[in-house]
Amino acid sequence: MRAALRFRFVRQSGFCARTLSQGVDLAWFWHNSRPHQISQTSSSEVTTFVALLRAVNVGGTGKLPMEDLRLLCAAAGFTKVQTYIASGNVIFSCRKSKTQVKAVLEASLSDYAGKRVGVFVRTAAEMAEVSANNPFPDAPANRIMAFFLDAGPPRDTLDRVTGRKDELIALGKREIYVHYGEGMGKSKLKIPAAKAGTARNMKTVAKLAELAAKL
Image (cartoon, rainbow, N blue to C red):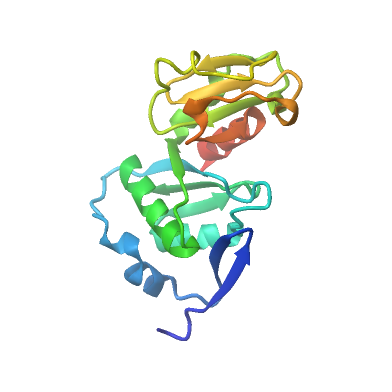
């Protein structure tokens, strides 16, 4: 292994991370990591994407420095990479499809973390649509959560909800919107269909849409 590629192992709340040092040889990492085995067929059109990582830097678990996330994206060949806050939000451009972007990022993160890290991908236009379609525009943006899914919510999504009090729920294309009247921290609401997804409040969604539009 090249001396330029140095990992320091960090164990926090059961999450084993290999943190990339500033001297990392990105080309070597990309060539020798699993994503290199994924088909690299490129599109002729450059697309701006927003990738949302699940359970990163939340509640003391899944520690991932945003600098390392940017390095991983650069190693994957993504350009104009930028992150927003520390909850696993990254914006970039590339010629890959959404399916390829998801596969490459999940494989890179699995190699990095030693376990699966879910990634949910939207184009800049799709993120803008999620923001514009906020079904609760008059409510405080930080009390409205959008749960991002890989596919459309199941037909029985609302039927399977439990613990509902004053929360309002609306279904989007591949999102579930929830207005938490008293705040998410006090809610006992459980939405089985949202369990495999990742949530962002609408303030964050709006900012990500803005950043992606400017990239």
